[in-house]
Length: 256
Image (cartoon, rainbow, N blue to C red; front, top):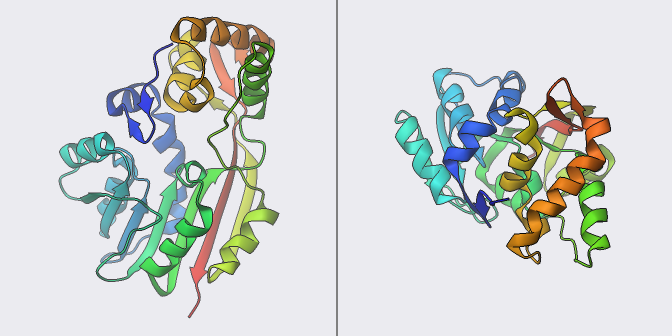
C-alpha cells in the first residue's frame, strides 16, 4: 500500500485516474445550485476543478479554492476559463461577496466545522445560497469498522479523519452560523470503486492515510488484505467493490 496523499497534499493524477466517481456523483448537486448567468459562485474544496468548470459552463463567474497545491495546479491547467486559488476554507476572505457557495465531498475533511461555516457565511451576500454535499452519518461504516478492528487487534491506535454528521446535528450548526436550511437529505448511495479487485486498496491509498500513520510500511499491505477478506462477502460483487456510502446534502440561505 502506497498512500496517494500526504496530509492536505493530494496526488492529482491518482485522484482523476481512479476516483472519477467523486465529481460524477456530484454533477446532480448542480441542479440544487442552479447557477444563473453572471452569478458569482465559490466552489469550496474544488479538487481538480471538474465541477467548477461545469458551473462556469452555465455562465457563472466561479472561483474554486482548495488547500492542495497539486489539485489547484491540475485545475488551472485543465480549466483555464475558471479562477482557482490555493486557500484554507476556514480563513478565506474574498474581496467581494458571492451569490452562492458550492461544495461537493469536501466539508467532511474539515475538522474546524464552526470556522469553515463562519468563513462561508462571511463570503456570501445576504440571501446568498449555500449548496453542499458531504459524507453523512455512518458513511463507509462497514469499511471503517473493519479497518479499526484490524488495527486495534494489532495494537495500533486509530485516527478517523472524517466528520460525518446527521441532519439533526448539522442543521442546527448551520443555523448557528446565520443560515436558514431550506432542504436537507440523508441518503444511501452504494458506490462502485474503480479498478476491480484493487478498488478498495486504491481507495484507502487515496482517502485513508490517517488510519495508517502509526503503522510501519511493511505491515500495511497485510492489514489491507485482512480488511478485504473481512469485507469481501458483503461489499465485493460482480468483480467490483461497492462501498456503503451515505451522503448528507443540503441547501441553505444566508440570513441578513
